[in-house]
Length: 159
Image (cartoon, helix red, strand yellow):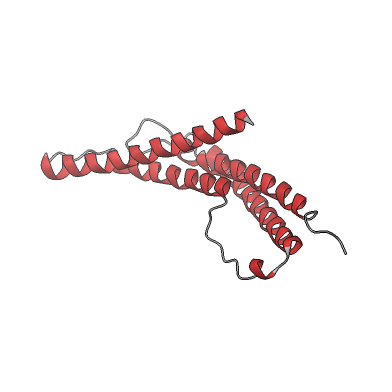
């Protein structure tokens, strides 16, 4: 349990660092371009890649907190077992989507491992590596959610 909390905390810190880096890149670009009349050639590309990473890290955090946007019109009309079944279905769908994304994300990461970025010192594989990593993390959270949903089947006394 302590290891899980440390991993969750590391993801939170990484998300803050990535977002702050993106913000600083954009601010630096504006300052250098409009006030110093000497634009930074690398900041736009780095900000774009950091935005991609921030988006996927946000997906991980939202999956952990179960805070994705949802419509609960059907769920509120169901009993505890129906809600558990719906939650299990959602978790299975998330696992399936994450598995597909992990597979294709890994393929595209490998395919771009030797493609250099335009102005930066790392390869496109670094940019794409967040896709399979986030998919695996989300699948793990969905597995935990599935386990909780299965436990929810026993919450209501059987007639």
